[in-house]
Amino acid sequence: MPVIRNALVIAWLGLVGCGPPEGEAGCLALVDTYATRLVECGEYETYEDAENAIYTAFFESGGWLTCRSVDELRDPESFYDECLPALETLDCDPAAPSPAACSDQLIVHFGD
Image 1: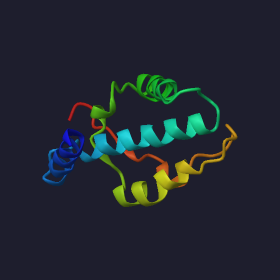
Image 2 (image 1 turned 90 degrees about the horizontal axis):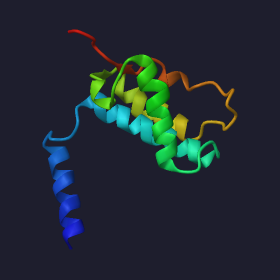
Image 3 (image 1 turned 135 degrees about the vertical axis):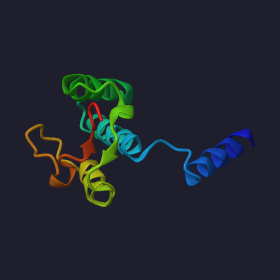
């Protein structure tokens, strides 16, 4: 019973605006989707390994520390309706192009 109650409280907090900001939430969804796909494609043995590789590759090289650094999404509708679904079925070939709907979606304002 406590698990259900906790889930309801979390869902309610999200509805009243207590969830992460749009950019951070989108970033977390992107990392989750991509990490899941990397495991499905056999690139990493565990979700945690894939997730750590993503943070290392994308965030450290881009100067970001975490998803909290992402302020907004360029186009939230295409991000959720096109980008994430495309990543879920992305070809496992490492040379496969990234979905166009994912291009430049994570916006970070440095020094604003």
